[in-house]
Each structure stands twice: as structure tokens, then as C-alpha cells.
Length: 253
Image 1: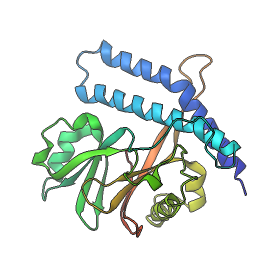
Image 2: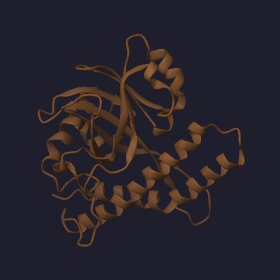
Image 3: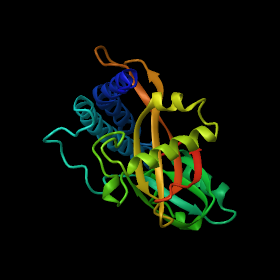
Image 4: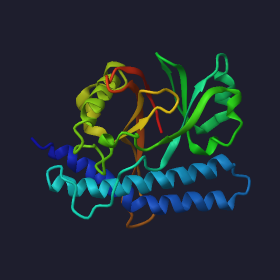
């Protein structure tokens, strides 16, 4: 049975993102340019947000067409194969370096989680990657929007056309609920706007699953522009193909 409320909500959020984000980002970028003292990290963060919005808008439009065709990607849609754009980075912390790494990353740090297999992980924006982070991390690399496994590639925000992705998403959702990060599974699925399944580049045979959910609503900053919504996230690390969850945390790339 089609969840009309969920689709309508996602469509409203997607429309707000695609319609209002360009103006919001233009203002943000202009603000950075107008203040020479603005850090390179924040200028890089603006670029990261632009990439995220472009990706979200592209996938949102295709999701709407997919809904109309009961999950079938519309003819003529651009290919979404490959690993896609870089969405951030992940590092495996060296022992005793957590505080120093947090200080070095500052606001570029978006999540930290203890992986039961490999150890402490930190997730951060691409803007921070240029720092001399090898002091704090034993392994570090960029994270792409999609995993290398082509069975997990899709233009659909929820990967509804990829059967191999559904057990991964289900395991991630259950992990978030089990960690008491949301009140219930229904609350999570109602706010879920998109899923990214990426390779965990610091540990073979592992995935990073990012569940993107509706965040705070922001009033229009210009007349005629829809309200915009922040996107919050949950990050789940799991073995693949067993889908055994090894870490879960609020926040993400």
C-alpha cells in the first residue's frame, strides 16, 4: 500500500530544497566572500552544501517521477551509476587522540561513533581533509555517495528499485530505533527523506549508511521563496553482506 502522507511530506521537503536552496546558498557564499576572515573550512563547507543540494535536488526530482511509475525510474533519467560525488571523509582514530582530533576538526566534525570491529570513527566534511590529520588517525579517506557494489546504485532517494539495498536500509532503521535515537520506527520512516549507502573506506567488508531525515523548518528569506528545511542525519556502520550493525550514531555526512 502506498504511503501517501509520507510521499507528500517528502515531496514538500524536496521541493523546498530544490526551490530555495540556490538562494540560501548564494547568500551564504556571498557572506563568506564578503568577510575575508572567514575560515577556509567554512568556505569549503559552503561547497560541500552546494554538492549536497545538487545531489538532493537531482535525486528528488527523479524520486517524484519514480513514485508516479510505482518505483520505476523514468525513461531518460540520467545514469546514477558509479560511486558518485564525495560527501565527506572518515577516519579511524589512533589511541588517545580523540580530544586533539575534535579540536583540529572543529565544526567540520559531524559525527563520532565507536565501531565494535575497528574502533573509534570520526566523520567530517571534505573541507577538513587538507589538514595534517594523519597525526590523529591511523586510516583516513574520502567517502563517496554510493558504494562500489552496483546493486546498491540508484537514482531513487530510497533505492526502492534495488532489492539488495532494502535489507541494508531495514537493518539501519532498526539500529537507530534500537539505540533510542528516535521514538519509534514509524517516526523515523515518516521523516526519512533519503538514504546514502557508501563503502566504509577504513574497513573492508563494511558499509556506511546515512539516513537523511527532516530537520528544522526555516522561514523564507525572500518573498516568493518556499520555506526550507534542514536535513539531519543518522549514521549506521554495518558489515556487508551480513548487515550486522557495528556502530550507530546521531549525525552524519
